[in-house]
Amino acid sequence: MRVTVIDYKAGNLTSVLKALRHLGAEVEVSDADLAPIASAERIVLPGVGHFAATQYLDSTGLAAAIHEAIGRGVPFLGICVGMQWLYAGSTEAPDQAGLGHFPEQCARFSDSHEKVPHVGWNSLEAKASSRLLAGVKLGEFVYFTHSYKAPVSADTAAITQYIEPFASAVERENVMGVQFHPEKSGETGLKILRNFLAWERQGMA
Amino acid sequence: MITKRIIACLDVHGGRVVKGVQFVDLIDAGDPATQAARHAGEGADEIVLLDITATHEGRATLLDTVRRTACGLFVPFCVGGGIRTAGDAAQVFEAGADKVSVNSAALADPNLIDAIGRSFGAQAVVVAIDARRDPNAEDPVRDAEVFVQGGRKPVGRRVVEWAREAEARGAGEILLTSMDSDGTRAGFDCELTAAVSEAVGIPVIASGGAGTVSHFTDVFARGKADAALAASIFHFGISSARLLKEELAREGISVRLPC
Image (cartoon, rainbow over all chains, first blue to last red; front, side, top):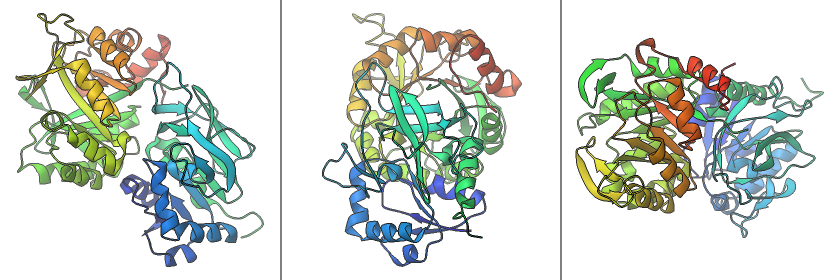
């Protein structure tokens, strides 16, 4: 299986590429070039750092190309900031719009006595209908490192508790996102990536 | 619920894991890639690899070690030792590290923290601080002295103010080693850890002094640590991350138990 990983100059891709290759994927890295998106079989949008970095997706035309690929039914997985980008936007960079595939806004964790960023291993409460999280048992742990998060909504595929419940995974048909780092989450993370690599449109071969 | 992290630390020298007391009498403790995989398999939440000699000539060996170690590792992986510039950090990330730890180079030029954070994100920058209580200071704990060169040279900074500056510059975590406790196996310095952890909003990893399970319970409860580093306790089969975590869970500490 072939996976197109988008390099939008937001952090280090090495770990994501390594995990996908470990699972047998043929990985292609794409930056400003739109041609690989047009012929992509699967797309992964990683990303650590600031939401403002997603500006690169707009200025290069990648956002429009991804929008079109998603419309064709290409399985898409956003990781961390890559997940947040699927929403309308984030208070981290109010002037930078997200893709808007999910209508909600991402926001910083509320003020509390807990530390922000949320760093470390936390558990998932996955929706039984999630195909991305198939086989992930209640309370399995994954690795997080982030200060902004998506709210719980109808499209939420998993909820995690930190300060407040937030969407640790989102999924609607071929469009999926995870706030945690599956490439850094041991066997549980590899299982989730394997599910993504095996994702096929239902009713198709 | 967020869990307390147990981090396995591998000191490496010339491509091998070594263990000694305060950098002398080094004993060979195996191959870094094998050791890292074993610790991760036994439930370590993260692996830290420290190049304890960090010579210029040794950089190629280190990068090769990082590459080999990262290859089969699917938990967070932090590398420290000899990272002097953002360019050094970039090479280590390229080789497969998720985070870098900077210590003396950040003290010499604090802009290094900002520079690495800008390119790779705050989550990728761990500022390591080696501190020793200062009995002559008004507050011997909060004003513990910061040292470099394995605790030989004071730099004229105080632990809490330096940790706060590191955070303000964009550090993602603080790795705090108590020079008083390091190598003693008599327990972490909980007062020092709590003083730093309460002064910053980023996670603090406690290091130095681990010898028994109750030392970990203590540093999580009294020391308010978000994570604890263990090196010698895991070597030579003295204890494994799995056994440590099972005992911590019995003590009511929230940990990730391996499946």
